[in-house]
Every structure is written in C-alpha cells, then in structure tokens.
Image (cartoon, rainbow, N blue to C red; front, side):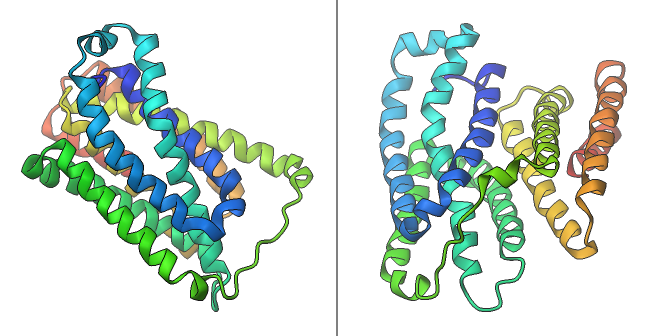
Length: 277
C-alpha cells in the first residue's frame, strides 16, 4: 500500500516491537478473552484485505512513498492495531499454559514455538501463498485461520480456563536494576533488528522477498536463542554481555561485508549465518 521504502519497513519493525510491549502489558486483562483477540485479528485481516487494495488505488497514497515522515506515520497507523493484538496473543497463550498441569517453562516454550511458527509462516506466505493466490486472497486465508482459532478457543474456553489464575504483578518491583538492564537489552535488540534489515537489503538487493527473508531469519534467531538459553541455562548477565558484543561485532561485519566489499555468494552465506547467530 505504502511501498517498501526504508520508512515503511522501519515502521513495520517499530510496530512489531511496540505492539509486543503494549500487548504484553494488556495480556493479563485479556487472557480470559483470548478468543476475542483472535477474532479481532481475523476481522482486521478481512477488513485490510479489502481496505488495503482500495487504498492502494488512491493516487495520493502512492505519493506518500516520497514523503518519509508521512509514509512512516501512515504505516504505523495501519500496522499498529494488528501488532498490538498479536502482542496480546503470545503472553496470553503463555498465561493459559501456565495454569495447566506441568506448566514449568511455559513462557519460554510458547516463545520458542511462536517465533519458529512466525518465521515459517512468513516464508510460506511470501514464497507460496502470495504467488499462488495474490495478496488480498492470502490475507483472507490467514484471516480464516485466525477465525478458526478464535472459534476453537471460544468452544473450549471452559476447559482452558478451568484452572486459570492470574497472579498480581507488583510493578514497583520492576524498578529494580535488573529490569532497567532488561530495557537496555531490548534497546540493543531493536538496534540489531534495524541493522539486520539494512544489511540484508545491501547484501541481497532491494527485492520485495528480502523483507520476508530477513524478518524470518531474525524470528528464527529469537526461537533458537530461546531454545539455547533454556537448554544450557544461560544467565541474564551472559545474555546481556553477548548482546553488547553482538552489537559491536555487527558494525564490523557491516563495514567489511557491505560497505567495502562487493557481496559474493560466500559473503551472503556468512551474513545469513551471522544474522541467525
């Protein structure tokens, strides 16, 4: 709708991160009504499949690609509602799993499966569904899947919520140094994701498919990182120091493989491996 320029891409990334934060803050209030969240996602998908195509035909919208600030703002307005709803879904599922028997590590398991599934869905959508059915029809297919999930949660809500309990969170405790450190780790993560987009487009060329490839690789990295941290019991301090080292090393890799060297096949393989790491 608004093109695939840097402002639109960064807006999608910003919405993804912001939506995850807002959704997590609201998750405890909506966990019991998770089926409504999935239903809202389905309705948004049906609405956008029609509204997006109608909006793309307006000539004034096409000119927004040349206006970075307006393009960024419009992209945020279009993507943020779905990002917030999606941000509610992940922690809500984790809360529901935690209330079931043998729920140790429920959030970690949910996070691993969520990101792995998201990466697979992005690649499936970009390289198969859109090419076979087109953008609007693909969005409707995904909306139907969300609708099925919503109906399933609604029908099974009595079983799912049988042992559900929501613990009260003391937000004043979040002012401790650990949570401040976590904030800066999140900042480092967002910087790296921005770098991943930029480096990916420099290495692989400004093709539309690269949005899906880079995003899928980053999400797959989240899933693998969570799995490694859970398997080897990596501490927060180790993860934070690794994030700092990764950000510093990112600048080196970017300058060597992107700015000073014409990318070869080997460069692309190394860069892909680094993005996953």
